[in-house]
Image 1 (tube, rainbow, N blue to C red):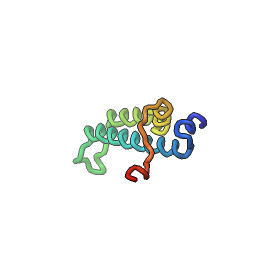
Image 2 (image 1 turned 90 degrees about the horizontal axis):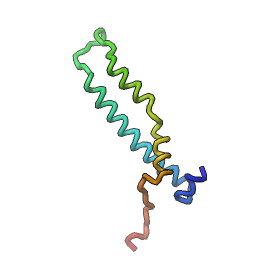
Image 3 (image 1 turned 30 degrees about the vertical axis):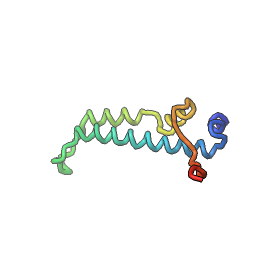
Length: 93
């Protein structure tokens, strides 16, 4: 927590930055997963014809084993891989 706080001087500001990055990572992962699963989707199945697709199951399991986006974002933040800036209200003064 001290390392996270020291990056910006404010723990809550650091957490907000990490949370925004975690949300970005989560959206990217979700879009990637849906695009991969869409390749195997059959749009003509009725409820009775739904069957398990082994490729879809394996892809889903692989994504379930991925690290949490919040952990990835925290690691990026601590390694100075996230660009952020403060909104300066005095910018146009």
